Image 1 (spheres, rainbow, N blue to C red):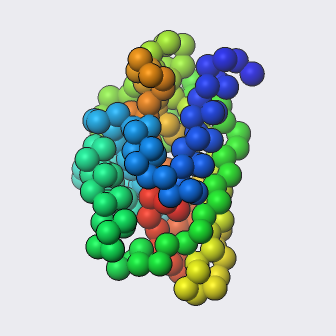
Image 2: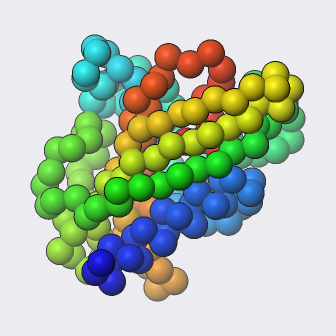
Length: 181
């Protein structure tokens, strides 16, 4: 495994751990201030929406301030859907450097971060599965899908400039939020 791929994989695994331990302040620090966090919806059986600014999204935050606001609402009881938080377990697999200029994920309307050959920016694809135990309902749910992280190098390491999450089983009986993805 290349050093860059190992570094990217470590970042994705750290992000998963921070979500599972509800260490959301450190999770937010993984993102750039101008990051984009997007969960497109499906407009057909095999086609997702392509632009969060003009089409429906399951979740969309255009910057870290939006994510921070959502974390604040969950943490301070301002989210009825998150009144009793699930216990989560994220599994990240098949982490690969995305080919330069690839279109494996929908475009977001923003220009792509440079390809994997650039030292200062890289796109990384991965698969994810989240098991969550809904404490109040005494139920287990499994969510799964694909990630594309567009990462940029900062003096203190790689940061997430853009995260696109394709939820493959989006017909769900329960809530969907950042801590589940």
